[in-house]
Length: 228
Image (tube, rainbow, N blue to C red; front, side):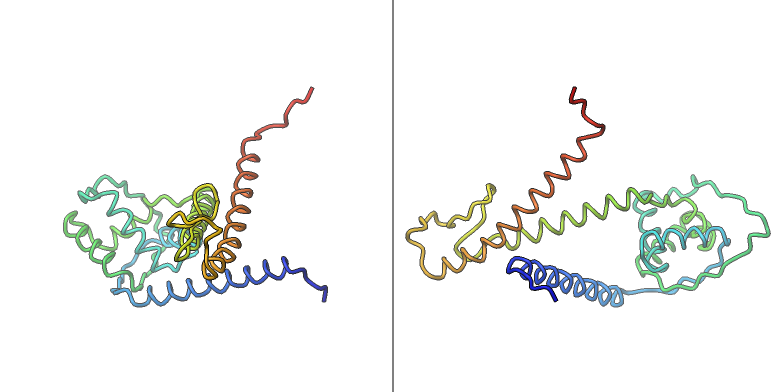
């Protein structure tokens, strides 16, 4: 195996640490989702509506019950006055068949559906079908953009949470300074240890700033420059 430099070993260790943190985060989210109060929804909808629900769940990389809960949340938020009558019901051919849904959806989503059903005078099955067909499935481009924005936000939170110690802090200009303005010549041993820690974080912040600058520069170049 090729010997790694000190820097390569450090980067590999950081990558493994990030992978472990991501795995732990997913495990926590999975445990949390299982603890959320859920209620069984049993309705029959057209095959076309079910296929649309499946597609939406696949694109969102989420289980069907969670996607169904999301749709009920989304529509209810967009229509707080419960004006569901405006949704146009699509006519289906008899050959499309029916699909029985039996999912434990979020209790809040189930309650939303129950309120809508009573207010609009429609069955839960009909509402579920109409809401699924009315739901706008995000494009691959919008999903990718949302993923990038989430990643950027997570990085910002990470750097903000790691950019200070008990005595020192990384300021907006990426300089390490003492919180009380004490000059470096008067720092004690603990503060010098904090300096070593923050120096590593500052390097990561600098690399991230460079990466963003490169990405922004690439986006600004929409066509080949004319050097003549």
